[in-house]
Amino acid sequence: MQLTTEEIDEMIDTANDIIANPDQYAEKCKRKKLATLFFEPSTRTRLSFEAAMYELGGNVLGFSEAQSSSAAKGESVSDTIRTVGAYADIIAMRHPKEGAPMVACRRSTVPIINAGDGGHNHPTQTLTDLLTIKREKGHFDGLTIGFCGDLKFGRTVHSLMAAMSRYDNVKFIFISPDELRLPEYLKEDILDPKNIEYVETTDLEDAMPQLDILYMTRVQRERFFNEQDYIRLKDSYILTPDKLTAAKESLSILHPLPRVNEISTAVDDDPRAKYFEQVRNGKFIRMALILKLLEVK
Ligand code: NCD
Image (spheres, rainbow, N blue to C red):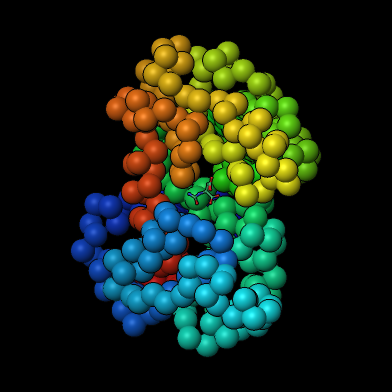
C-alpha cells in the first residue's frame, strides 16, 4: 500500500535483472546488516530474506522465535525495534498481531519490512507472487485469478488481491467455504470503490475453466479459535490432477506454501504448477526490495 504501482513495476524489473546478472549485485550491500525478527514460525520468508541479504554481500542477524528474544521477558515490540535499530540497517519482522509492524515503524530509525502480520497482510509474499505472475504471463491486465481456500485468515490473499486490483480488467473469483470467505472490509475498502468485478463461490471445479491463475492456500489452523472448526474445514479443497482436466493449458497454479494437503503432490509434475518457481522468485524480489529501501543504486 505504501508503494506506487510504478515502484512495484520497477522492483519487478530489478528482480528480473538480478536473475539475469546476479554477479553485478554481489557487493551492493557490503557492510550492511539486515535483522530478521520473527515472532512467528517461518521457513521461506525468513530464509529468503537472509539469502537475499547474503547474495547482496551483506550480513544478517536476528531471531526466529519470540521465545528466544526479550519478548519472552515482556519487552514491547517498540522497545525491541528501537534496540535492533541500533545494530541493523534494515529490519524484516513477522508478528502474530495484526498491525505490529505499523506500530514498530513509528518508533524505528531504520526501514521496517512487514514479513506477515497475523491474519492481515503479507506484502513481500505479494511481491513474490507478482514477480511470478509477470514472468509467467508477461502482464497483469485482463487476468482472471481464482483465490481458493482460507480467504478469511489468509494474509497472502489479502495483500495479493489488493495489489492485483491496481491493474486493469482483472477479475477475481473467490472460492472458499462460507465460513472462510474474504472479509467484508476488503470488499468495501478495495473492490467496491473501484467497481471491480468479483464472484464468490464454494465450487472450485465450476470456476476452474475460467482461470488464468489459481492461487491455492492452506487453512490457517493457528488463527482458529476452535480446533473442531479447523478439522471440519481443513479438507474443503484438495487440488488433484483430475480437477485440472477442465483448466486452461495456460493456467498457472500458485501457492505461497507451506502446503498441508490442499494440493496433491501428484500435481507437482504438471507443467502448470508454479509454486516452487514462486519460492525461487521470493529471494530475488526481496533483494530488489532491500536495494530500494537502503537506497542502493
Ligand atoms: C504464508 C504466510 O506465512 O502467511 N507463508 C509464506 O510466507 N510463504 C502462507 C501460510 O502460512 O499459509
